[in-house]
Length: 444
Image (tube, rainbow, N blue to C red):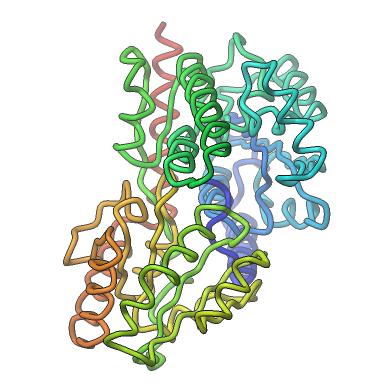
């Protein structure tokens, strides 16, 4: 998924406690970092877009995988942080990493003069505007320096945005960790935009993103996708590439049924509202789908939970009687109160962690195909899939009218994710794929 999935400061407290437990365990059992014993791979992890606070889908996935990897390997993290984000706290939350360095980076906001200048300059470059903005000279210089002076087993480019900050052609195998198929996000933006001028600009951008994404896949020694569908899309024109897919994960101890009574006609959506696909999904839902639901359930309510909602969204939500929470300290009470969790996404890529979080809490979910894309879910058992407004509304109404069906679907979802998709299991998959790459490289 693209950065911007959930906003959850409560998760920060959970991961903080998780880190403290790891430190206590290491001190009691003997940490291999301190004993001088072999500690596995030496990994350089590069990410533009930050890791702390853990408030977006991409940060959640990367943070938990890094946390788990650092228990068995030497991990050096180079990343960025926005103004106001606490890079010192990130270091405290990853206590077993060899080193965690973060560089201040504030990409220009859309429609600002700095963004327009970046867009103009990107037109004379092979880089699309999103990647043009993602170049961080201080980060790139440090990556280059470390790769020259230290012997790493692998270098991980976390998201496509990291790739312009990593020098190509070195001896260290490059792992491209692709949380999304980025060009598909831009292509879907283009297909869903009603402005002729914006559609023209987006058609140029998505093709540039596809070209650069193909380039990244060609130079990478290993592509790690987050679903088999994404893996196949990324390698469709590169049959010789080395690619694999790992599972989507969830913190099954933090996200669990809370035992509170549902509000019978309450719907909920969670997601960073400053990510355009999320805003598009909610505007689409409240204009096209919610009125259809209210024909059968006039009292149905919707709460939208997530940071930085736009003025446009707030105005439209007020018009349709929808609550918009903005930033909250913990999304779980909002999810627990709802009878149905909705994911009406039309644009996106990768896999949606939000669905696994809802399933882990035992909630009935209605999602579009795009929303559930790449997840190992069975329609009708773990969730209900619907794309057209009428079908989506019918699915929601059917669940509102059948508490037993909601409980059955929620239980099936919880059983699925708890049994197979903890972050420890996902990190083991990632680690095994990287070790196989090193074995191949050493044998070559």
